[in-house]
Length: 383
Image (cartoon, rainbow, N blue to C red; front, side, top):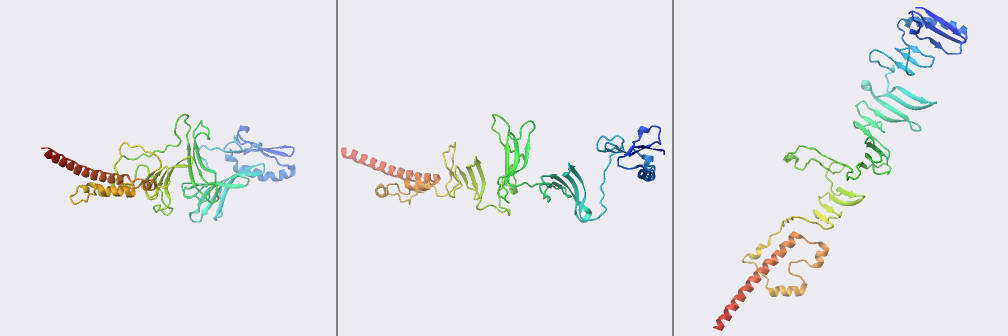
C-alpha cells in the first residue's frame, strides 16, 4: 500500500494510493495546531494504523466534520452504509444495575434530549428504554418497560399503555384530519384540579354543522336470547360498583345531566327519578307530566269483588251519610290533604273507587227493588 503525505502549513494530509484512482479514497486531515516535528514523530504510528486497516478502507472523516462508515461521501454528520441491514452497538462491560448507555442531544451547550437504556431487573438483565426532553430540566417523559408496558408521565407503567397527567390537564386527545382540535375531538382528562384527586372525564365534540351529534357510542353483539347465567347482561352494560367490587348501597348508580342540571337519576336500590333526585322510596318518581298509550297497574291487595260475597256487610246509605257529615269524605277514601302530602296510589285508588262503585251498584239494585215494590203496591191500591 502506498501512502502520500503532504504538508500544508501546520496541517498534514494523507492519501492512500494502493489503487489507480486517488479520488476513490478519502484524504484524512488532521486539523490540529501541530508543528512539523511532532507530526513526524506521530507519522510512523499513523502509517502503521493506515496499513493495518487500509486493505478494506471505505470510510471517511471529512474536513467538514462529517463521518462516513462504509461510504466516503456521507450525506449526514454520521452515515453508516452497508449492502445488508446494519446495526450500532453500545456495550457496557460492567454487569451492574443502572444505565447501559444513552444517546444525548445538545444544543449550544444545553442538553435538550436523551434516549437511554437502563437495566431495571437483575435477573436476565431485563431493561427499559427511557426518553427524556428538556422541560427546564431534563425529565423522563416516556418509558418502554421490559414487559411491553408503555408509560407516559410515569416510570412504572401498570398496563400496555399507562398515561399519568398532572391534575386538571388532558390525559389524551384524539382529533380528525383537516378539522381544528377545538372543533372536533375525543378527550380524556381529569375533571378536577384538586391535588391528589382524579375524576376520569371523557368529552366528545363532533364537527357536524346543523346536526345533533356530540358523542356516539355503539355496542355490537350477537343477537341471541341471554342464557340464564347471563340474564342480567346486555349488548351495552353500565356497571356501577364500589371499589371493592360489591354492589352500591348508598351512592347513586347513574345520573343523566345537561349542563350540570340533573334530568334523570338511577339509585342503588333500583329507583329511578325523572326530574327529581328524591324518589321517596318508590321505584319510579316523576316530577312532571306524562303521556301514555297504555298503562297497566297490578295491585298486590285483594280486588274488591268481595263486595258481592253473600256475607259482605254493605254499609247503609244512612251510615255513609253520617260518615260524610263527620269527615267530609267517603269511607276508605283518602282526604284531599293526604293526597296533597303523600300523592296518589293509582292501583290502590282504582281498587277503592271500584269498591265504592260496586257498593253503589248494590244500593241502586236495592232502591230499584223498593221502587218496584212501591209501584206494585200503588197499582193494587188503585184497583
